Amino acid sequence: MPSAFLQYGVNEGYFEAEGLDVTVDVSIGGAAAVPAVVNGETQFAGSNTVSAILAASKGLPITIVAAGTRTMEDPEDDFARIMASTSSGVEKVEDLEGATIAVNTLENINDVVIMTLMEDAGADRTQVKFAEMGFSDMLPALANGQVDAALLIEPFVTMAVDQGATEVASPYAESRPNMMVGTYMTSEEYAAENPETVKAFQRGISATGEAVAEDPDAFREALPDVTTIEPDLADQIHLPAWDASVDLETLQFLNERMVRYGLIDEEISVEDIVTAPTD
Image 1 (cartoon, rainbow, N blue to C red):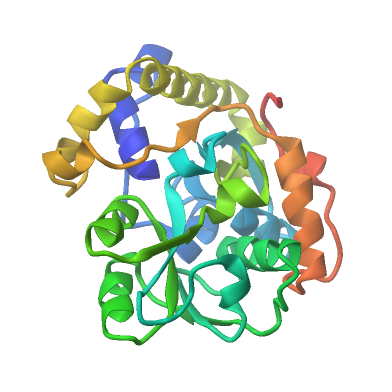
Image 2 (cartoon, rainbow, N blue to C red; image 1 turned 60 degrees about the vertical axis):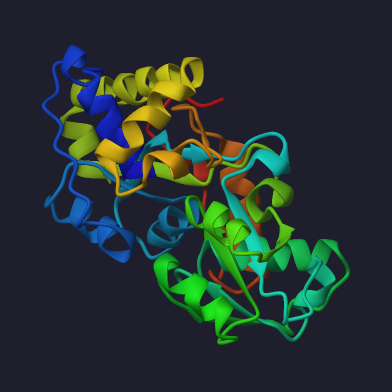
């Protein structure tokens, strides 16, 4: 959905109004996003917040220029859920002890929020197993008992609910209210050499976010054109919140948790990896 958000902004002319000709390349994502901006293959890339911190901890010259997806204030309205198969016996966070959970990327934001929820619930976070798979593979894996639970995002959350899966928790929203889950980043070199372009990109992101907030139905109506989501499903799913400003408190929260859970050896200075207005 982050790429759909960006494409919606392009289609609505918010980036063109800032003098930018933006092409959204959905083939560059996940682990490929960071090297793509570092080597100049692309000027900006979307990624989750933990990936940005991981890259910076390894000394890669990236900088966050805008926020991407955020959680909703009410966890019930959020776009991400831990869903469990009815045969797994998993009904609440404490039941995740000993369970196998599908995540789309290992040692990343999903591990962090799941272990945070388990720790907060008094469960042993070391007694959980993660299985890496694509979101589209998670529903069959739940159905055939390959995994006990899965951390899903929309539209797969709504699809899992329709198939009778058990809703366990909203891991992003319950780990930290208004969590900044996604980011847009560029290389330090590009930001230093093209400050006006960076500012224009930030304004385009901000305008797109404001438009979706003001008229979410228009965004839902556009989803079948910018994604493979069918119109009926687009009407049902929970949308993320978008706000271009960068939340340093989310960055620091994840920074600390990443050290706690062994994803990085020591904390980074989160202020040093931001080239954007902050909350």
